[in-house]
Image (cartoon, rainbow, N blue to C red):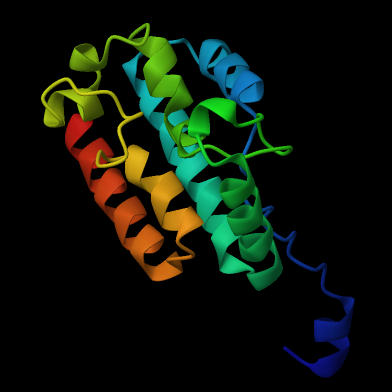
Length: 152
């Protein structure tokens, strides 16, 4: 391709990054996608991708850490983007099983324990963010994605 052709070419559209969404938006998308197992797992995957987008940028990461530290107890967290709770990544799974953790593919791997506990798959997210442990969070997200892969 010559220079003139290269200059005339149409630029490739940039892929828009997947963003972290509010719980309400996630549940609405889950319902629009069929409200089934596949939609619940895909919703969790999209939220994890959105969280990865937040932690990739230093300024967004710093904001996330500040929000997580300010709320202290996750039960007091505002919904995204005003606040952050790691369970936001699991909202479609929780909705799909009506918060009956023993029915959830992640909850089953945790002996039916709720992800609200800080030493569970999604529960560790908030703790890692509050501790400013970005590499630990990336590793935890990898582990959650492996669990979701096994669930399909």
